[in-house]
Length: 106
Ligand SMILES: [Zn+2]
Image 1 (cartoon, rainbow, N blue to C red):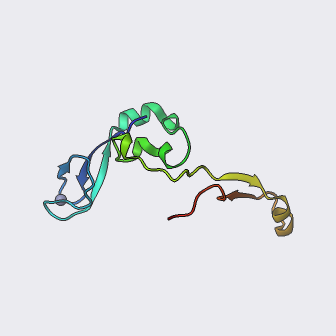
Image 2 (image 1 turned 30 degrees about the horizontal axis):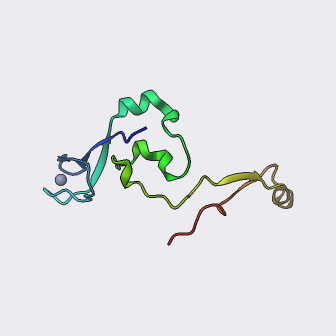
C-alpha cells in the first residue's frame, strides 16, 4: 500500500505544507506533524501493514516515492517460548525475541 500521508501540518499555527523533508514550520518555527488519509487507513485496518521490516509501515510513513525507500535487510524479530527462563523465574509463561537476524546499525 502506498503512503497515506497527505501533507505536513504545523502543530502550533496550523499551516500546511506538501510532504517533504522538513521538520519545522517556515512560518512560526513550530513542529510539523503528518496528516493522513484516515478514511483509507480505517478501511484497510491492520491489513494495510503487510510484508516485513520497516517498510510494512509504509502506509503511515511520509515516503511517497518507493525509490526513496532504503533497507538494511531488517526483518521481524522472531518470538519463541523461553521455557527454562519461565521455570527459573517461576512464571507460568515467558517469551523472548531474537534480533539476531536484524543487521546492526552502520
Ligand atoms: Zn507554524
